[in-house]
Amino acid sequence: MKPAEPRFRFDNPAGAIHNDCKVALTTTSPMRGHSAAKTAAAKTSPAKTSPAKTWLQAIALTARLETRPHRLFADIVEEWAQRQPSRPALLSNGETLTYGELIARINRYARWARRLGLDAGRTVCLLMPNRPDYLACWLGISRVGGTVALINTRLVGQSLAHCIDVADADHIIIAGDCVDAFESARPHLRRVPQSWSLGAGTSGGDLEAALAACEPGPLSSAELGDVTIDGRALLIYTSGTTGLPKAANVSHRRILTWGGWFAGLTDASIDDRLYDCLPLHHSVGGVAAPCSMLCAGGSVVIAEKFSASSFWDDIVRFDCTVFQYIGELCRYLVRAPASEPEVRHRLRLAVGNGLRGDIWQAFAGRFAIPHILEFYAATEGNFSLFNVEGKPGAIGRIPPVLAHRFPVAIVKVDADSGSLLRNDAGLGIACAPGETGEALGRIGGANRDGAPFEGYTDPAETEKKILRDVFAAGDAWFRTGDLMLRDTQGYLHFVDRVGDTFRWKGENVSTSEVNDAIRECPGVLDASTYGVAVSGADGRAGMAALVVDQGFDFGMFGKHLSRRLPPYAIPAFVRLCRALEATDTFKQKKQQLIREGFDPSVVDDPLFLLDPATGDYRSIDPSVYARIIESEIKL
Image (cartoon, rainbow, N blue to C red):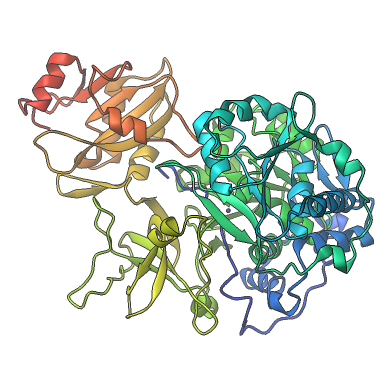
């Protein structure tokens, strides 16, 4: 499949075009791609694929999926296993699965699931850290009709119990490393699923023994059953940055589309190795990245987690040609000390989302990355954007020839409430180039443009994401919750999340813009910007939570921001923190910061106020706080 922080989101990029593509296509062989010499030369003389060819490759690999409705992604893996059984499919520090071994493992999982009756409508939760077997597990279970809920391994207690309850699962697979987390959730579960252990330390069924008892050979048509591309394969959870996570429905069709679309856009081939250090329980790290390589017969290197200190060593050691990023990882790499391997790699492409314009050139230049493919999408969403031209800071552009297949609109919304602004006729108001608004994707069906919105397990939550009667009576649009603007060249740019942008002194303040400026200040290691209510004042005042080092100086900080930001956007309050809480994909968690505000009786961290009289930041103690609340200090 995120800014202040950009949502690291991903969803159905080609769902709007695979049914009825009007572009003339030449079918591409799955064995097409780079020669070894081409890949080896990528570092010094990359052969850049034209944007038009890139789009056509993606369309060719995803067109007319319904002509083979029973061909699932596991079948693609099986086809490659027949051609190249000994080629590595999935690699990690502790394990390697060739294509032959991967399909054998998939088939064992499929037969195990059949024996348990895990067919359509039945769900199993998967609680497992990053490792090659993760892919084999969900590909096998979903192949025979079961749904696999991909559970965040960082969750514990009630949060973990919520995700298991939402899945309404009959079974849960628990890796040995996740036993303690599951036990912390057990008392909070509405219903405890039957557990299956992988590794020491777990109670319940011995899954490894059960798999060993299952045959690894090809499945018969009777064993495969009547599973079609429109059946649900996965539940993937939203991050829960503004509430409890929601479980998004992901069909086999979308898995095929994600894999084929990204294989085409990245020009993937059997000679490629993609480095994937993102969580496998998310749609980018767990589906889009690995499936793009498996679709093309390439290899995926799965890291247990991201590490700035070992990143380039891994890239060189595994001889990777492609790297899947999220923007914050690139920022961490730019901040890390220089190392010899960082310029000895053979990467030809970095693909991902959330790479902000302020570090794009620094990242590409320092590490000699030939090409960057930035995209925007959402796990639950119904459209995606792709910046195939590599314009720094842009999240994508829809080619005019495909505009009718990607009905995307940017509409005006109220900055405070996030509600759609409507004209006198009761319809939405489209933004002009350069104007900021919420991005919407038209929900389509058999007889109209747009792509389906598969929604969540909770119908009420699904309905909340739909806007109706936007441009015509009866139309329906998916709400991204993301604010964007379209420039005069047609490129779209991420601005902020709805709810993160706030109004102060009659002006809209973008938290992502403020965050970018703050992070450029010497001594600032990390920052999170948000708006807080102030007694007696309209709107919300800006506040920044900072993590700083010994080089930070408030005088330099104030001067830096005054050069970068208009006065109304400079944070009125600052909170110095030891660390900032984030999700496992580095999305910042702001809700507690917003609730705590700038009250020194609630916040243990040092708090500061931009004194309107002197223009300097001063400490907030209980007396200063009382004067602010009583409006004696007017901001």
